[in-house]
Length: 130
Image 1 (tube, rainbow, N blue to C red):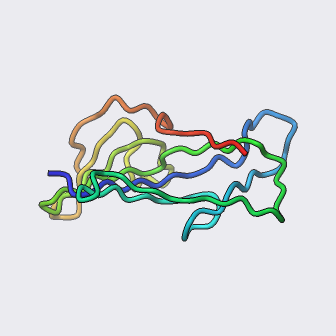
Image 2 (cartoon, rainbow, N blue to C red; image 1 turned 180 degrees about the vertical axis):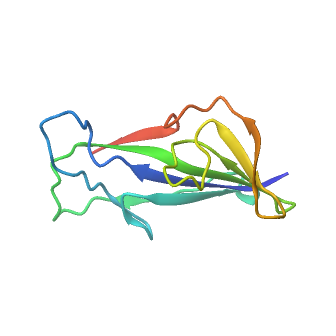
């Protein structure tokens, strides 16, 4: 049985990396996280619902109207203590699965490929507009 799901979202620093805009989008500050990256925990005891609040800081004008977030990490923690690492993006460090792979760390702390999903890289995402 699933105990909880951990998700980490990261923000792209620009709307479009090919535009003439060479600034960096800062985005809102999230509860307990600051701007950019934030985490949510979806627990079975809360029917897998959670909330987080973001606030734009008036002193910062990053000239961006839209902010694009994507799931960077997704872990499914089972009630028996097992954790499944679901690849949802690309991990250049190689310590996390690339989409669409799903890993499990075995008792010897070795990574084991369990199966692949139909999740495409960066497909779990959302856009936030001012």
